[in-house]
Amino acid sequence: MPYQPPDITLRGTEHVEKYRETDGEIGYTWNGVPILLLTTTGRRTGTRRTSALIYGRDGADYLVVASTGGAPRHPAWYLNLCEQPEAEIQVKAEHLRVRASTASDAERDRLWRLVTAYWPNYDVYQERTRRVIPVVTLSPV
Image (cartoon, rainbow, N blue to C red; front, side, top):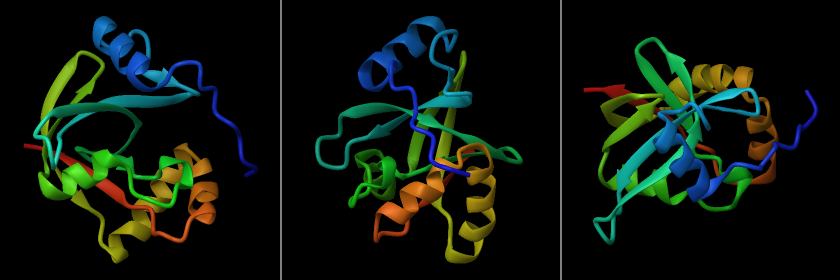
């Protein structure tokens, strides 16, 4: 499937704020895919930081992808999860505590097929970078 540039009219801090204010009424669906809010603890500062991320499901687990559009470095939220895997997500009005784990090589192949089924641009992002883009499982605790 050819690359489809996303509509970026809602992004970053504004996306997080609108999502929180409306319990996802605004911001849950972005470019036709569902969005969750992931709150991590900063690995250097200890400050809680929230990102709006595309997500998928694998049973009871939530899947997010540390792509940053194929940038050469992992996103800060991913590095934070590597240091402190306990986090919180918001899916619409529901708040859940989760534990993050990065998919192993064997798991990643299966999960990559799942995530690219709902956001094919991940394949394009992977082509843009030399790093292996992590697929992260967020398991409710």
